[in-house]
Structure formats: C-alpha cells, structure tokens
Length: 95
Length: 92
Image 1 (tube, rainbow over the protein chains, first blue to last red):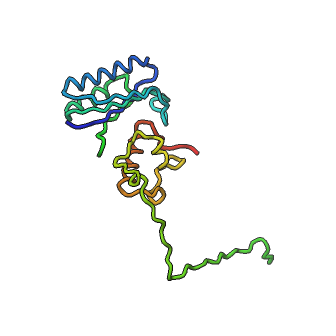
Image 2: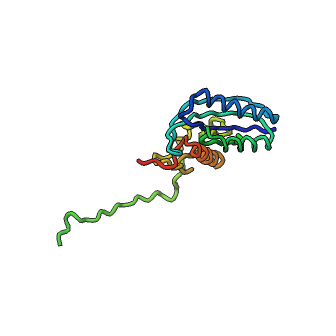
Image 3: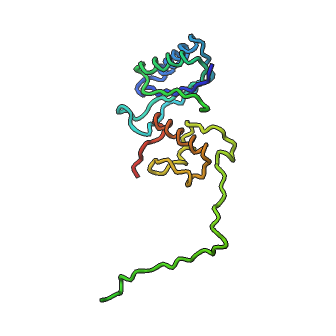
C-alpha cells in the first residue's frame, strides 16, 4: 500500500454539510477497497488565485490515505465525475 | 557644435587586481539548513517567497537553493497553481 494525498475543491454554493458528506462518501469508497484514511483536513472556504469556471472561491480539503493503485484510480474517476467537485488532485508525497 | 548637455559620460571601470578575484558569497540552501527534505506544495506562504511579484518562479541564482530543493520548489509551485492556491500570472 502506498501513501497518497488528495486535495479537493468543492463548489462554493453548497452547504458545508453536503461537502463534508461527499468527502465522507469518498473516504468510504476508499475504505471499501482496502484503503486506510489517515487524516482529513477540512480547510473550509478559500479564495482562488484565479477564476475557475466563473467561480472565485471553493471549499478546500486535504485527505491523507493509504491505498492500492487500483483503488486510487477508482477514486480519481469518482471525483472527476462528481458534480460537487470543481477540481481535485492526488499526489504521492515524497516524489 | 554645442557640447553641453549631451556629453557622454564614460564610466571608468576599476579593474580588480588580478591577484584577488571576486569571491562568490557562500550561501546555504534554506531547506538544507532547516533540514527539510520535502517541500510541501500546500505551504503557500513559503512558496510565495520563491515567486516574483509577477508570480514567476525565481531562479536558483536568486533564491540560492540547491539543485534538489529548487526542483522541489518549482514542482510544488506548479502543483499549487493547478489547485488555484497560487497564480499563474499576476498583474503588477
């Protein structure tokens, strides 16, 4: 299993509970495929450095987890399809 | 021809004696000194220091970073830009 770091940006017009619920859902997706969520850091609303899709802010969150590569691919796909998510990024810290 | 006003000033260059060439100031990379092995791309305030006010990445000769850390700073800034944490361009 490898350590990954996920950063998500959720749409700003959503209520915070819905964003947290969606994050929980993503964590469950990982857990269901043998992943272990180590830490979830919810940053809250933050202004963008530049406009994305005519939006100027969004909810930022950082999730650190361990998982197998196929599970990560699945997560990446789910995030790309999710309407709540403006942008996301999965990185492997340390390389 | 009136020469007043348009006199070309010739700056006299002081040549440094051959015996003592210019010595570069020895600087140690900030990250090496602090013992940071991995540059965090989420630390926006830190990365800002390595950008010009036009949001360009500062060159190594300006930052004084070692090759490894300069590379890490550059990729960290690029990652942060993708997530709109840092700008690609900034109008001055």
